[in-house]
Structure formats: C-alpha cells, structure tokens
Length: 374
Image 1 (cartoon, rainbow, N blue to C red):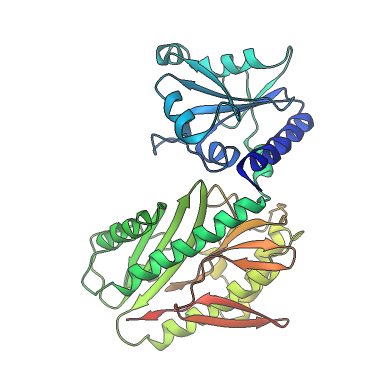
Image 2 (cartoon, rainbow, N blue to C red; image 1 turned 90 degrees about the vertical axis):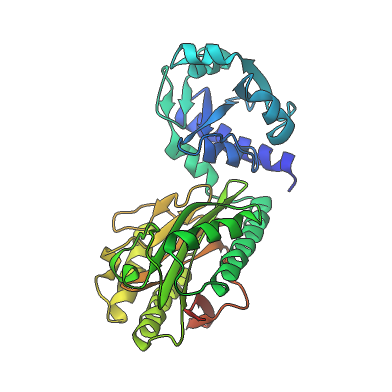
C-alpha cells in the first residue's frame, strides 16, 4: 500500500466514524492523530503540548483539509503533506491568536451546511470531543504501517542493544539515559519515555526517572521510541559480572508471564481476559499480587499505550493491532512490542544477539529478553 492508498484507507475509517457519531467533520490537531492520518507526518513543534501547530479536517464526504498559519504552512506542504492530499487553508497567526475558538470556527465554516464538528482535543467552539472514537480508527494497522513498525522495532532494539553492551559501572543513570536517546536519534528515532534504574532503585520503583546515581551491579533501561508517529517500547537489563541467581529466577518468571500474555493476545481477546491471564501467571510463578504493583501494558501504536489491560477493560484486540506488554516482578522486568496478527503475535523488538528466554505454550515458542551479563 502506497502513501496515497494509506491516507485513503484511513479517511474511509474516519468517514464511517463520522456517520456513526452523527458528525459533519472532525478536527484532528493532536500530534499522534496528525501522524496517523498523514501516514507518518508531524505537526509537532512544542513537545510540551499534545496539540500540534496545525490541524487536519476530515469532512463527512471525505474531503480533507490542512488548517495552518503562515508560520507553519510552507514547511507542512514542503515536508509533511501535499495540497492534493489535504486542501490548504492558511491564515495569519494574529488571527489564530484572536480567539480561542478560531480554529474550530474556521473548521465549522468548511463543513457542509448544518454539520456538527468533532475534535480530538478538548472541546472548543461547539466542537464535540471524539478522541475515543478516533482512537478506534487507528487500532488496526495498515500493511504499510506494519512494515514501518517492523523497521522501527528492529532499529530501536539494535540501538538499545548497542548502548547496553557499551555500558560500564560508574556511569550515572542520567548519562545512560542521554546515551540511549543519542543511540536512538542516530537512527532517526526519538524517545518519548526514557527510564533508567541502577541497583536498588530497580527494586524500589516501577517508573525510575533517571537520576545522578551511579550504577554498580545491575542496570535497567526502558524506552518508548517514536519514528513517523509509531511508538515501540522495550526494556533491557544488564549486569556487571555474573547474574545473581535471584535476579535470574525472577526474570525467568517474568518471561513466563510475558509468554502467557503474548499467547493470549489474539484478535477478539478482551482486555480483562488478558489481565486475568497475567494475574494467573504471576500466581503460578509464586508472585501473586505483583500485577497490582504495576500495569501490565496494553495496546500501542501512535501513543505509548492506547489502552491498558485491567480487570474492568472491555477493549478488544483487533487484527494487526500493536501491543506492548511489560510484566514486572520486584527487581526485574521484561518488555517487548508486538503485533497481533491472525496467525499469532509477531514480536518486533527482538534482536538475534541478545540473550533470550524461550517459553513454549501449546507448541509455540515465545521469546523474552534475558539479563545481559557484561
């Protein structure tokens, strides 16, 4: 599927969503939705904001527009979208700042008479918030997205693998985080989450924001890595010298939980069922209750997680939907990103030269990353 076909396929999904929601059009200004509909483009300028610097509008009849100020439009048309794909609607930046409802008002004016406007951001100017409905349009990856995801998973895995092998005790968590970001950036990837835990911090905190602590024996690196809008997540742990037996035992148990999740990630499976599969696996491994200390992960794609598996989840696994599972047991964690295909999961972030823990379930082998001794 080429870019034009991908945009057309996604536009069709949006048009069907508009009909179901009774809307005349939807304004897509969030950075993740711009990347999705534009087949990998970016409207991001300020990373501190969910909203990008411009927005896309899809009308109920399938007509598409890009709404942007004179500051943004030249770059957008040169690097992100074409005028044939999205009709340009340009305005002065002073106009945009004149009213908090300016963008919604311009979008309303482009709708067919009497149309109601939806928005993926906070409702303004009479637009209805429809992010949940838009998210459902994103879940099933196109063929070209699957190919981009495979390349992203491979490159991110190699980037963090190369980084991990170069680490030396005495480096600070912050230094390791910077080097992880640099290793990804060299491959055109940007980390949107970078976590690093040294030694005792790995046992204490599930979300270890990097600090100035120097690592001595064990180090964990976690990244959520984005390229062309798609995000892949992975965790790697290294150990200076031989791996302690307790760390090895716990990591093997986490790998068996991960295998249960991978095996259960099939089209039609419900989020609550996936959570239950993980909870049972923890109990079988002798670590009952660990699922309550950190979420297990869930659906991925253009956000780090579109939804999480939890006891009340009614979300359903779609064909060719991405998932990132991250089972953890105090002191260790495994995490990879995969795609739920009709024939089973395809793990994207596994790299051949990293030590793996194989687990067989119903005749199929599932691999999880082991601790790498340095």
